[in-house]
Image 1: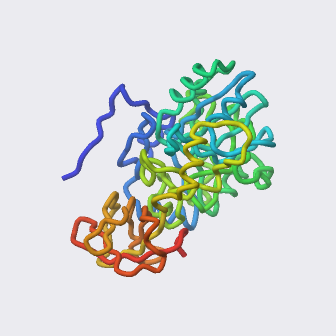
Image 2: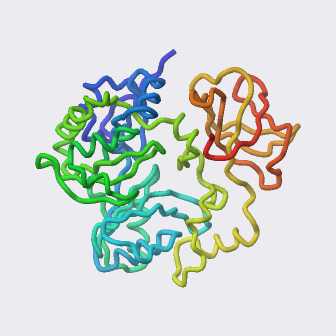
Image 3: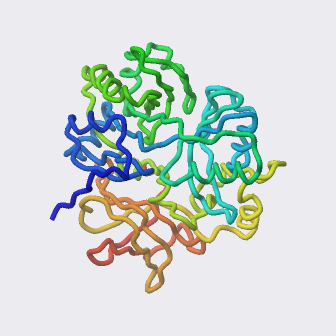
Length: 368
């Protein structure tokens, strides 16, 4: 039987909420305490539009944590495992965040808006409270707030044409993770080349929540000649692309080396950062698990299956964190974690997706 999610006052509505309801949204989830559209009634068609055309996503649930003040950069450096030396105003960097035990607690994009102002564009965890506490405990001169900036994503092969039609051809020269503060018909936005897909696109960070429906309408109008489709981030495309989903793939207790983010952990930095000592120990001892792809046999998977054991004989040696059927590859694929003791050429892996054991074999990420 179908289930519903109740719309209540204890969860925040996106500035685009009314526009997505009018556009036929069929399902919501809750992410960062915000209602986030899950699909608009045709997940398969929405996937195809992402892969071949252009889609519009309400991703206002991707909240921002602003660090502003004389010690803003000091706090940004202390929170992140990655060196941020030489960042320019208008540049973003992918920066894992860990706790003091080396566990991954978020994987945001750090955006430098000014020499004394940064945003952390976060995944689903309460980093605002974490950053506020650390700033206070360290006595830093910095204000940590939610600046109420709400992204609207335009993704897919035709996304650049749509966004150039809205803002001008200068957007075609914008490098990945770089951004510019601008406006559209008087609507203030931060425009970034970014987004949670490998199909390319942009995110429009709305700076005035009262203009959500206006911005949504303008993007839909500009995208109409390209067949723009209202949609939501695609689990199928993200698994195919090997994109990490914090909370889905990396729940508490996974460190960045296990999650495949070791390149973003700069232990040779002279300065301290949260988790540095623990991460050094983990690196010296070697990660117990590694993130991998799986091709899974058996009948086509219907929908999404998550958090199932991976077996080698009677022994549990890993976890499928998310499994889907890939229309592009015409096979069942998954991402997950596997014991580092298991070699890449292992044979005989199995998983149970709720309908009995199925054969599984390792595959490189992203899937080809």
